[in-house]
Length: 635
Image (spheres, rainbow, N blue to C red):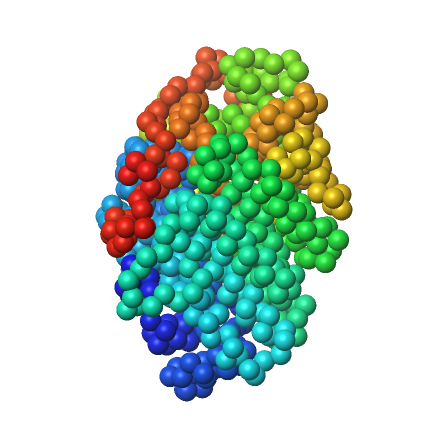
């Protein structure tokens, strides 16, 4: 919240910068909106007088959205128990989090400039390396407030155009506040333009107070915005190219998420001292999600779950002329900055070097997290070392009969990783040698855990098949919110609001368990078993496991563990590897049939967390501005 160029640019500077940078937006075909008169750079009355000029001002807010997938050459965004980094480097935030050093999100503790949370060079331009949350978030809030305070100057516009402008501004004000709240707790809710020449005295609100203010913005935005810009007179100017523009579905999605987060144990404890769920806030969340889902299921909104055969298109596209991923399922995405970026950097961070890729920073799925991928019949695996007749799990064939998403996301021992030709002297590396002592198990630049993560890359993204080469147009870009997430948030919110797995919003056709099963149906996974439907507590275990699997490695786990107040407790503080020996004849055609022995898990590290680690520390420079802006406890 410091009053400097990065966080609180004055209106004249904001106007000039936004009108220039709007031209660079990667949202497709914005040119018609951005034809501006010279006077619009000088006069606020001109800048805001009509839809063309005002939308040009508003466009810059899209450029304030960080691209956490591609903010650096290699990128860290999973900080829970889900992922661990190779040992060759230690500059990414995941290493600092593992060490309990939550100050590491701040740029002064990031000598490489690799973080997406805080970048001292943050600007609203088209450089993916200059996107951050902290600086651009406060900048975006101020920009939204300037627009709202000048909204009365929009006189040359239709009612539809006015609704579109105001709806976008309200959404972004709520969205940036929500992003800050989930990491730092309740903050001042800035809903007017802070003067640069007056002393700041705004106190920190409770999480609930802040969330209620954000909810007002999201609700009003949802009421003003269409389900899709293609359905508007304005949107017909860019027909078929409006997917990233803020709409009713996005506003409803974050309205619900904002309420669910506020009603979750951590946030409720911060607000009231009670570490259980708040049923009232969960009911409001469920109602917002139900409104969204009803619009999608009726066909009024163009969002639907991608078929499982196309599941990867949620996260990457290849051979589609750099098409942004997400398809019909992505609800909220930021613009993509630089097509030839993720293919060379992000794609290589998941493959072991030097065997099939170069680079020294690798991100590996922890063995304990992979255990959440249960069996195809929908039953969990209680202990990977023990056979289970009911689920069909066999520790001698641990990769057999698993949830189909396991095979989509995870490379396990014996998987064919190189499809084409390779030199004879390295041919043994065609298949993933992930057994204990295997060639893929180099802890410095290979797998520390016995698994690889391929959720976000095609199997050909290696130096022999060259699946990340320019000609393949590989584009990796993970959405902030997608439709399956909404179904799972509805399941959680409805169950908690009505104290049962059969909890249901009146007028909407799905219960909590129906919504969870709907997500499983897409992947061909068995429904929630009856033994988990006898109590809310038992059902919540499956809700948490389903979120772990369906949303694996998409940046949700850290905040989920925090809001559930599980982050500092075992087993969630542990990161493990899987160890085993191959026996018998190697089956190259079907690696699930390869027999292993001596299967066990070994703790790689245990994170030493305390209650202070439930919230990130604010910047000391900011909390020292005035007494009412207090640091988080323990920091």
